[in-house]
Length: 64
Image (cartoon, rainbow, N blue to C red; front, side, top):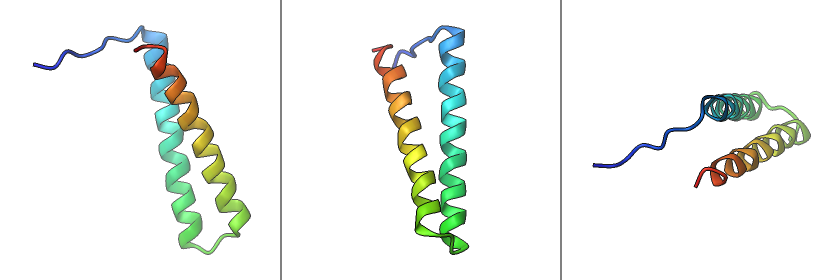
């Protein structure tokens, strides 16, 4: 049986918020590509998604 990791409520909320933001950025980036947005606009969303991923990694690494 796999043990689940309990996160303190504020940290769990921070992770949830960042996951939600990341999902939104990825969805919008894909819509921008689909609708022919400029490469700069697509790159801006991709860069922000990378930044949020890095924040998530930092938060999760602090819990390991």
